[in-house]
Structures are given as C-alpha cells and as structure tokens.
Image (cartoon, rainbow, N blue to C red; front, side, top):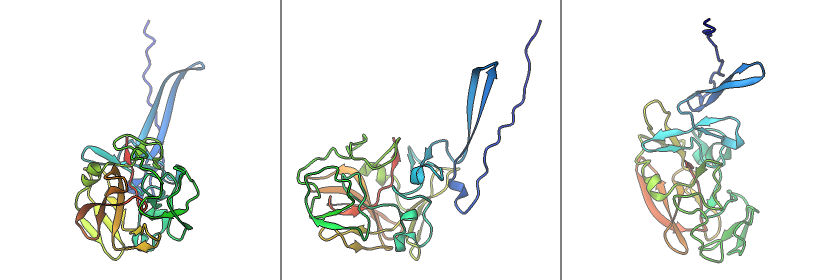
Length: 257
C-alpha cells in the first residue's frame, strides 16, 4: 500500500516597500507536523542576502551587503535606517549612526557632555566624551581585539568592528554625493550599494565636530600604538587610511563575524 502524498505549500513573505526596499530583509516560515510532532521546519528569506542586520535593535530589519569576501552592515553602528542625502551633513543619528572613541562600547555623539580625560573605567557607559590623546588611563589594545570581537565591541550580536585591512577592501567609491555627504560603493551582483555618510569626527582635544558633511572617518579594530589606532577616511571618491588618537570620536561600519 502506497501512503505517499504530494502537497504544495504557499508561504507568504512580506513584501518590501519604501525608499530603502532594496536593503530590506523579510522572513517567512513553515512547519510540517504530524499530529503534534514537528517533522520539518523551513525559513524563507526575501532580500539581497540571508544575513540580517538589526538596525536600531531589530526593526526595521536589513540585509547584510556582500562585497568580495565580506558581509557588511548596511548602516553605521547605531543607525536605524539606511543613510539618505543630508545625513552626512546634518549628522542625523537615524541615518548617520553614533560616534565612538576607539575601544569604547558606549557612544559619544556630537553635542554630548565632555570631561578631561583619561578615565580609569574601561566601561564608563555614561556617553561622556573624555578629552585627550587616550580616553582610558592605560593601554589596552584588546578592547576591540583585531579580527575577533573584543569585550567592548559596540556592534550587535554576530557583527564586530572591522580590521583596517577589511575596511580597505571597501575601496574607492563609484560615486560621491558631496551635497548630501554620501560615499557610495557598488557591492556584489544582486546587492545594493554600500552607502557611508560623511559625518566627520569629534576632535580628541575638545570634542568639537570637525568636517561634518565633508569627510567620513571610520574606526578599524586595529590599534597602531598605545595612543593611536588605524582608520579610513574619504572626502571624495578616494578612500584613504591613517592613524589618529584613540580619544577621537569616529563612525563605525560593522562587519559580519
């Protein structure tokens, strides 16, 4: 006796909408049960990749963007949506994300409180910008920990601060929106562009904003000395690298672990 049956299932996955629909990731699921026992469960993803990034804590949910060997977050750390024209010049946190001193877990955004540094607390969690060459009173190059996730890494679960070599792989932009402060890089086929807002940085000596809307400065996890760390910068279609005092406030673009 042949008890085999053939069934067809239709699984509805939410459609994308809005100005950033190419970046959205939607999920559908189906479970096959016999009586009360689940025999099989399936998840169906609709997006440019099946790796998600929880922008702003999970809603909306965006797809990671593949470029070469790496999957990148589609937004800066702390941002709740994909960057739009003007976010770089205005420093709008929703699209531009937060600013971080190197090795710190808590953000220190423009307009926030400042204090003379350094502090002895490696997890102050007070969002105060500590002025000086180093915000911490000792050298600890493991806080962001190179190619592994460090104890102070601010990126969400499954992501970390990239190394300088990983950041360099982003390479030159395909277009530079000087009026909107956006650096746009083509990714792998089927993925939307990587859009990095030019939010400038907070000057380590006083915490004031520098180059807001004209340059983008992004930390790597790679420390270069007791007081400096490596970063990338751009102010047109060219990507550059350098080192700067760890007490400076830069942006972060997370990479998938």
